[in-house]
Length: 573
Ligand code: ARG
Image (cartoon, rainbow, N blue to C red; front, top):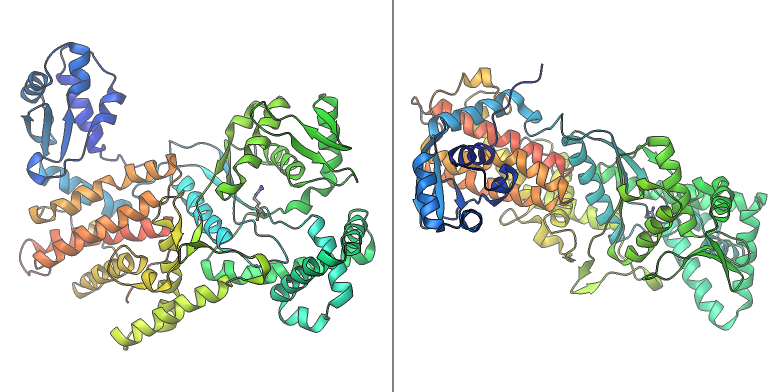
């Protein structure tokens, strides 16, 4: 049976204000949204500004605040004070604190999960690297953001369907085949698939500048591929398999799995149906021999079919959207793809709408900013690339060096180094707002101080050690802690943050911002570390249990928050 959860404090406060009003002036929802977290402790735990009410009631905000404060009553609220135009409330530390800790300790990792809110499937199209090319920094961002959004969707009650829309079709593979037939070496390709394919691709473009005949050869090879020529297909499959093997290594390091790998080629036999449907719906137009659909007044037309009959990226995305709706009947479908493809998705959604699909409104492009190195975009052009696998490996090696210096007796150093190194890379990306650019710096990622993954992991591990000293198991259960009888007032800042976790989970998902969780975890870690510095947790007196309940709750929430970001928590570090 679903345990009854304590109500969110903001909600309790909104209800109490609503009840204290003589007549309805604002909706409860609006009141809820106006509530603030005061910056200074003396201003209470939550504050309600009365300006909006003042407008509606035509009364001075200070006066309204006074009246509300005088009439406010709820068993959770100890004190309400009017300060100027604000109503500040103080919660009963003992009651409210005990209820939160008990809830976390009994729910464990389920704390903050919503079973009722979300309904149905959410398709998340993410990662989607291009075969025969290295996994780029942009694809890394898509991968970590997409996986975090999938975890957040599930936490909010939806069923996530994770799809890798591999870039495995297109004219570039014709070029690659032409290049391989001319200059390729089987042994080299087997040993170093991605860099060899990349070299061939770069050489093809260099030589094509002086030799345009090459371009025609590339086109011919692609034509052969599209018409299912045996040799062309075999080459393509080989390039694809080798690429997937290389990507797999990255996914394994990052702990990423997919529900389906449905790349562009997956839609090959659905292309003609899409083109026909567009034709039947009188949307297809001729333009210089090519076929296009007008996407809207404010957009260039969407290219559907080239003069030579080959289809394009957009055509495949149309087929993919139709297929996904049919196969998964999604509540929404997200595309986690860099901001530079904004126009593509606008066109795609507009064309689907023109085709008469009302669910086009459930498609969302989730864009993100760039990863910069020394302020410049990292690019794969001209073979000047950084191999992601190497970057992650470097982070793991550095983490290992750190551990060997600080804690050489630690068991399983290799495993912990992997969790810390990978966690550092992921956290570094996710702590930034999605649209911001990220400066790539392995040293910054790995410091144990500041806003980093290792800092959060370390805070959880440190709390874990405390619990072990008290011989309680991980994230001590409610039973082990016995019902929390007292609440340490010193822990109030920590408890307030613990209370906010469920609403942060909602906020992160609604804004499609994993950074909300990352920032929250840093705040919680800081609050706990400062609490830890102030009080002796293993005090040996009546307060010890209650302090351990705080530590146990912090472990649960930090671990669960890290899990949402797809980061592991070492037991010790
Ligand atoms: N392979 C594409 C790229 O690297 C990204 C694909 C994104 N997903 C999609 N359905 N278009 O640019």
